[in-house]
Length: 556
Image 1: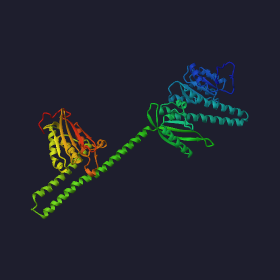
Image 2: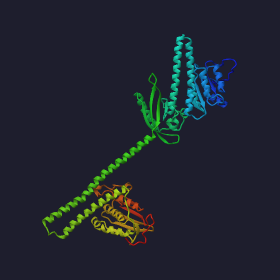
Image 3: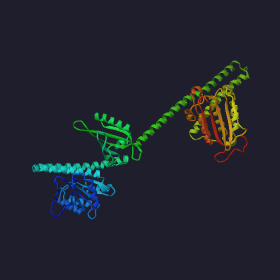
Image 4: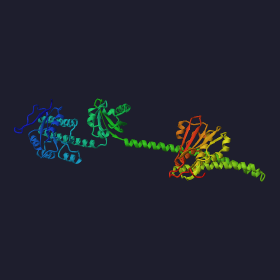
């Protein structure tokens, strides 16, 4: 074993060690097991260790021998570590022995500041991680050997040269220690992780920020250099390696965005910037960089894209609706205008001699177009009320669904005959409920109009059933039908099952139907297959939410 442990006597002057080339460090702790733990951690280094059990004992050792480094416990009975450090600086101001505090107390800023004010160069929390302790001790041992080399050189120089070198040495050491303190403080407060890796992307160093970033400690990353790549997808690893090669070849920094899986399996987005460090011969020595978590920003960006897509779709629907609405409104207006012109010409040419039947025909056609216009306007108004949450229902007791179906079907007889679709009605005399009669009539009208439009040339069936506390209406046609994709969006606003060029309409009828039915506590369903027609089923509770029913009321 390379490690040598010395428990010196203070009666015979300076300590004597087996090998003068070894650096000696002083470990001060009142707990023997803590001293043993430090000794075990440093057993791989070529060091001589002197152990002291109190601050007073440490001061006596420092009077007798020079040490490369002092590792001192903060909390000791009697003289604590802070007091011992102060006395060391007061009694030997020219002997700048590096001192690292060890403490089991919680790491607090005030304690750290006090430690640095006492002359410490660093502060480690117990239990001390062996890798971290060895790394820090190795730095100061290397500094000690450099100082020793400088001292040997100074002996060969004159007084002036020695003074210049001493001044430079002190400045260099102070600058180095100050840089290390600053770097340690900065890396500890960065909202991310500083890293260094080999050209094969195996991680050599990770700052303490990796714990909060990934759930893994710095020691785990240095112990398993390939751990970081295992958190990434293979595709991202390959992409980043290629991007880095190109960036470093062009003398640029590399910026990468990718996802990792934390220790708790939570996916997180990383933003990383790295630079290649090259040897004088141009060979890549290692890669240094910084990374941070940008998951929240990435989520906000995704949400923004989703909202923008929704906005674009809304604008598209608006533009499409305006185009369709202008066409639908223009059609009855044109027909109405032509009928008025024809009647005016006939009146001018045959004043008082126009047969009553011809005038009635013209007026009936004009009335039909006016009704169509009124229906379109009503649909637009209903849609506006639904969107703004102002759709109102006027519930009435004893509303007869069967009678409403027969009345609406009677109004469509002329249109049904014109398109060749006979209406077949299967309904009892009464199916009573607590409903809004006008809105219910609107539902039946929309469904029947839809069936005649897409089932033209074949029979349309209307069936009304009473099922205890529920009523059911089915409207079936044998027309073109639709696939599942169309069914999924059929009840949306401005949606149509087929092109408006062939069938027209604003795409609001089924939207309004569903909203009205659901407002009355019911549901509307569709079952269809391409070429096999469609069946729309409306199910309504016969009693309103307040418990009033229509079963015993007179027919409406």
